[in-house]
Image 1: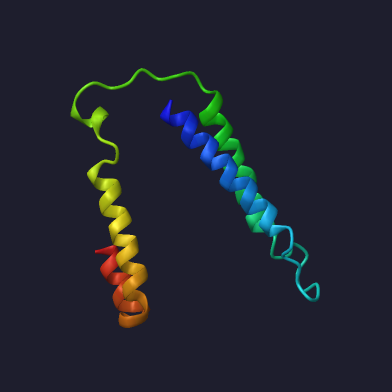
Image 2: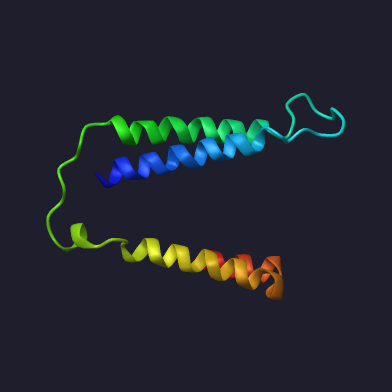
Length: 103
């Protein structure tokens, strides 16, 4: 059930992203693709993977402690690291903050 909810959220975010990218028009044509190609391509991929999460057969849930956690520790660690990187980027600069993120 969680996969289907995640798939629905991914599809909604992708459609919103594509809708917002429709207005990305450069003042002059400096390249054949344009600035909205990347958000549209990413939106299309997100919609495909989101739909796959919605329609795929249900997986049996795992047993044990890992199945009862809402967010596992590695996900929380990665999220905290990226938030810290964003907050320290201006103060420390790109090289130091990026090395800290990689470490």
